[in-house]
Structure formats: C-alpha cells, structure tokens
Length: 414
Image 1 (cartoon, one colour):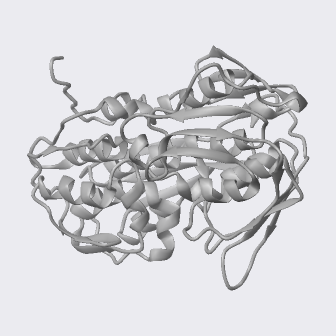
Image 2: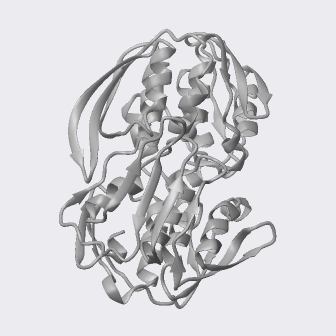
C-alpha cells in the first residue's frame, strides 16, 4: 500500500522473512522507492498518481501465495504488464480464484495450465464489479479491493463468512474510505470507491503475527512446566481462533492489552503448561485459524481423547496439501490420526505422551516443518524434519525463539 501511496512512508517492526522481502523487491521493480534503514525499519517512496511502471524482469514471489495474489490485484489497476513467477510450491497453487474476478474487472491474465504460475498480468482501465467469492478467502477479497482502488465505480465484495480484515483496516490507515455492512444472514459486504488516493504514513508499525506466535504459545502449553509470553501480537477476531480453540482444550492462557499498530490492537499472551483435552473444533473458528491448524494438530496429539477438525478443505490448496501433510506428520510420530475430506481426527496421547521419533517430510511447507519441531520439544523421542529451508519465508527467528524457550535444536552438519 505504501508503494502506491502519495509520499514517503516509514515502517517499523517489519517481518523480514523471504515472503515480505519478495514483495518489497516486486514493488521496487514496479517503480516504488524501497530502502531498508535498520532492523525491521524501512522507507517506501510511493508512486502516487503516476502509477506503477512495467518491470524489466519477472516478479518472483518465491513461496508467498499472499504476496502473489494481492499483487495481482494491485498491479491489475495499473497500465503495466508484469510476469509473476514463484518457487515449485507456489507454482503448484491455484490462482484462478483471484484471476476470475480480476478478469471480470478488465485485467488480462495469461497463466500456465491449470491457472497456475508463471502468469502474465496486464492491467489498466478497470470497471468496478460486485462479487461473491465461492469460498471464504481474504486473499481474493483483498486482491479485488486493491484492483478496485483504480477501477471506475464502487467495487463490492459479498462474503459468505467473515475473513481477515487487515486490508480494510490498513486502507483506512492510508486514508481510503472503506464501506463494511454487517449482514445477519451472512458475512460482511465490503466496498471501496475507485479513484481514491492513498497517503503515506510516517511511523507505521507492524503488529506481531499470530500465526508465528502460535508456535511459542503451543510449545508452552505442551511443555509440562513453565510458561512463555509473546508481546505485541495482533489482536483481531479474524485471526485469533487458535487462542479460542486452545482455551477450549483447557489451555491456560492470559491475554493482556499491549498497545496498537497501524489500525490494529495488539496484546501480550502468556501461556502456561496445561493439561489438554480433545475437542470437536467448531467449524466457525476455522477461517480465523486456518494457518494455525498444523500446530493445533500438535496440541491435539498431546491432549486426552479425540480432537476432530472439519470445514477445513482450504488446507488442501496451501503450500502443500496440509491435510495429508498434517496426518503424515502425526502418524510417523506414533499418533493415530484419521484423514477426512475436509479435516482430520486426532487421537491424543495426553501430556508428554506423544512417542515422537519420526522423520517428517516438510513438503516445502514452513508451517508443517515448524509444527513438527515444536512437537519434538515435548515428545518422548527426537522428531526430525527433512528440510527447514522454507522456514525463513515466514519466521526467520524461529530457531532462536525455540532455543530461548529451552528446546534443543540440532541442524545436520552443524
């Protein structure tokens, strides 16, 4: 958003994982000024009224589905052509769910077979649409809204159920009027009028990521003793389903106010070693913890009794088929798990009861790799992962934080 704003924005607390850095490189290639000024501190000079320029080379988003899909919407509003590429995992993920509505708005998009990357996007001269995504997806909603900033008319997205609303909040922080109409019989109706300008923000701060915080919280819950706290974590009802689910399992959690960050509230979460019990997860919580389901499955492995998850078919099209990956991760470590079309059933082994001892295939998926390693911190035997390279995409400090919490991590050859 800073890249298309009028003026120069300064940002602190930026997560410098590969996903974010790839987006920074992309907006720089499109003509924005991007400069790192310190740890987590960046300055971005927006293109303003002149808009993006056609990049000289491909825009490489690595492993980031969020980066690629949101940028398709943002680029689609500009009279430029850009070729989007990614790594092996991202190139296997579906893009048509985003490109279908963007094409309706006037974006030209040529993809590889099956609607996958590489994809060439040509934007400009867009018309507003009213669109109801067939699946709950904040990425689809956000891509449409970002394209709608430069479309003629008012762009409207009708959600079946509420999804993450970070885009709406941040657009407002950059001075854009966003309409949100709450419906009793469905999700919100979100609208944005085309032609509005974004204005740079000085001193913008980024809230801590709940999806990253979940690993430290889970590690404390299954540890057997002690506690851990995470600070500055985003507090947003569309992202905190993991905390609700962990509490329902018997997790001992305290949540305290911890300030604000660019349109979002932040909290401190203190997690203590807990005796967990299996639950039937309310499908209504799934959208607000979709990325936390792998680590939630690890909690289930250390709970007494069965935990059932349904309504999570979206996991099939993440960095890996996460339902299969979760089931394989647990099974190889001695946990009985049943795969369902839209979820899984875990038969827990109780506190400190997971056997462990398995080698987990990460499948190019950072959340599977991190979840397996957290499982190893409390299992009876060592848990190993075949590949950790992708962890840097979202959580470069993961190993430092695990060590801080008392885990013993050994990397082969070191």
